[in-house]
Image (cartoon, rainbow, N blue to C red):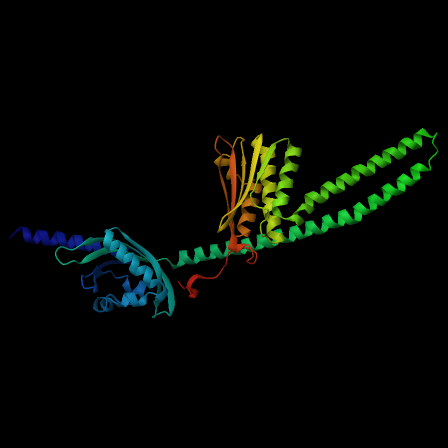
Length: 383
């Protein structure tokens, strides 16, 4: 009998310590039970109940089903599915969703994490864990998603404007400057025929000017092609085949273009964007890869258009991908994202790098390809 007061005192001390810990924990510490007949109960609820849920612990003890009623209707299925999965596997239950707090006329995001065990004999599963308010972090995630969506829209708009401006400048250079140079060459040829045949100095000067005009015409042609290859008017497949030959000739690297497609249904903006990605990838190969061979492959599945650029060079180290100056890689990724697709970098068999662009076919004609910035569920979120 003399030990009982000591045991009682130790229990009181342990309870006091537990209560102090629970009071200083953020959120709600709780026990939740689901009985064999489907009814539920909250055997234990800490003092954080009202602050988190807008309902007192006494009210939730008396009407445990009220918690389910707090959950927004569109989130209830995921709550029940997560509960059932945890009860069946006896794995931890981790769920996040929205509740309506009538006391503040507001929506909160909550997260519950708890561990299940089966009570002996009754077929009852009891979970013990904690609920926390994650509204602030969810708002931050939503803001980041919206910022990324706005950035993707802005990137797509900027790229479209740049491409349109390149096309305009290329056309003006080709039509106006090219036309003027052609006229100058014709006038120069007429003047050359009237020069005294015995004046070697004038003949040499005329030949020099004629060669200079030819070089300028070639430069105009090259600049126009760099700004906006006219071959794009014949479709992406033809443009990529031409680009592979041009790059191979200029860089002295073997380029193999492979596509079983005659053409891919793409609007001009998207065709130009994919073409620019290939150009940037080839430029990176020429500058950094030390490759002797490049494979360019264009294919189509029922859901995706896939473009792969592979080389046998020295590859890209992870540290190189993360460099702040890696604008080429970032630009390629942003272009792909603006198309509603993805760009991945991988290791080619035997060494080198594979750049893979994958775009969903149903996104081909949908706006500018940027992700939507709409709030899921359409509910107002408060703190």
